[in-house]
Length: 490
Image (cartoon, rainbow, N blue to C red):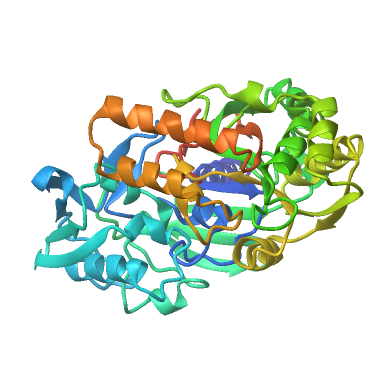
């Protein structure tokens, strides 16, 4: 009997130990698999959703509140009214392969990002850099061609992380950063696994391991949550099931905001979309609330320009492109356009696939036919984003405060009006908060009046997690699943 009790106690202790051990691991669901894991050479949001603040770090970083915080730079001095930034680096930082991180790596990273042959998707972030000088191993001086009060903000983007020349060539499949987690494995089509970095320079993370599972189908995502095959789904692709999950005490539903302006992007150089009357006709044919209700089950905030409603500089311009199908027909007639058929490329997210069907039906009522093509992200990036071979597409731009993309001459919707470029140039050299606010408001009004794109809604962040998990971001000031503060609680 005593032996039996001892064996039972040992089994119980072992079970408890196993349960305790499991409490420092987490499995997250993601709707999209990244095309690679190098954030300095790809535009897909799914890259940063795995690596931002987990594997890779920059000089600065975004906190969960959107504020710019120190990261690999402990502090920075601003000289010549914002034309020179002197960054003071953390001491004792190593990359995951054991090599030291110092000023030479910072110089390499910034020079690489701004190089003529750079593959960085946000190359404009680095365009103002005139020179990068290593003062000493822990001090880097960056000289800009003109003053830029937003430079620390720019350096917080995932595209601006610090990488090493020794490992960058393999970063797409074997990323080597300085973060609190290091890459473990990638089973393509299924999952990426990362593990705690025992040599991390900063505060150790609570989790010993994290797994990102790729589950694109909304029904499968719901089933995975119900079966507890995943512990959390920070960007849950099945909003129609949120009420059921919220009623289950095992889970908590996390609803917040994102930087994701969801747009019906138009190719502004593709006839007849090069005619503002045709673009305006398309805008007036769209019933935003029907899309929010039908595709997002009510989660989303209507927008009338490319700016987040939670931003203090937001201007409500929805009235410029309100739902008015009769006005759409009048504008098409004025433009001399009839029997119009446009190609509509839809990437994988549910907002695009479901929203695209609704928009196609709305356009049909004003006489615009659409040819829908469902494309995977790799094809979208190659054909639409790089090749500009499209008429219409639907995408959520999740980068923070990114209205400046409308000034880029090579950007995929091909706007870059000179008056708008001048506004962005003025914004770059302006440091006064009130003046910057006025410029941003003018910029919002210009692209809204030019009907550059069909502005649909601000993407909500709807997540689901085990009720005992804390530390996941409620809002998304950038595209990330930052696990640095995530832990299990009793």
